[in-house]
Length: 440
Image 1 (cartoon, rainbow, N blue to C red):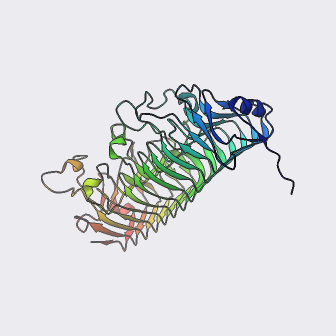
Image 2 (cartoon, rainbow, N blue to C red; image 1 turned 90 degrees about the horizontal axis):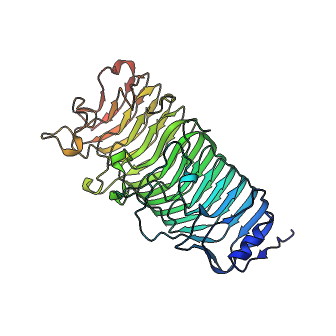
Image 3 (cartoon, rainbow, N blue to C red; image 1 turned 180 degrees about the vertical axis):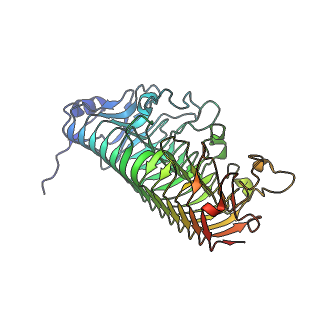
């Protein structure tokens, strides 16, 4: 084996000079390197490695830092970043950011990120730590063949002026990232989403991705969200305190925290063997999820219901995206315990929901008089919030709900024996198949 020869940079100016060639191997200086503007790789960067010093290297965004990110990579090929820390300049939580408008890429909207990558191929980010980043520690835009492995993200992200999360703080893949892997990330104490794929409806979908073996705790929004994507596997991840601190949740804009969330048009994807505790919202949201599988996951809330002010359904099907109806899904072998409303709100055609355990449902005690504040919704459909499974007629727009198989499930909770499986107006139990479900 031939050892790689690293050029040791001694300062930020040395780093810029060493990176200007766009090729070779560069080692960061030991200790702290302070930045007032980004380290930007040239567009022709190819076969480049940037790694930390064995004694430790930290890139520090100074208070007067101006620019998109500590490191900007655009149009590069075969770049590896490893073994160093990026410390941001977050000094307070509130910011002027909420969300981009008019389909503006997040990479164009947020500044003071950790690493921003655009239109690049074959990138590795391994063993990099991110602390106190104001926006996104790692933001990947329209790139391919990405490996993110063993990164550590702590105390990142900001809030809007109302004190609600603006989605920042975690890993964002946007505008059609393909052939990616995120493995063994550790994400803790962030204000927004932990790991997120996002594309606008007129953009390419992300595809052929893996999110595996990561730990996500104390996040203000979603642990993992798959948005506008195809052929994604989310497996063997775990976490706790999803949707906490509770005051960060953006409930005013329907930003209900979710352990495993979906948005847009998502198909041929798998959510498998993921386990979460203390979820202040929903366990699984399947808005626009079709032709996929949700198997062997768990969410457990064991504390008093007052601990979870945003607590919701266990699983929610939706059809907000006009191009996607939640059809042909398999939801099996999941365990959900302790939710404010029902086990699953179901719409769509030809879904199979079987061998699941839905325990301690209807913690909000919907169905009692006077109506609890948490239950003051859709009062014309009293079964919606108090049933083990509710077959709905609208998941954002009118829906057809037929041909679903619901069998071998167990339900427990307040009033569940009397309201086990119910339907919305216009939905027929006879046009769905139900058998061998146990309700106590």
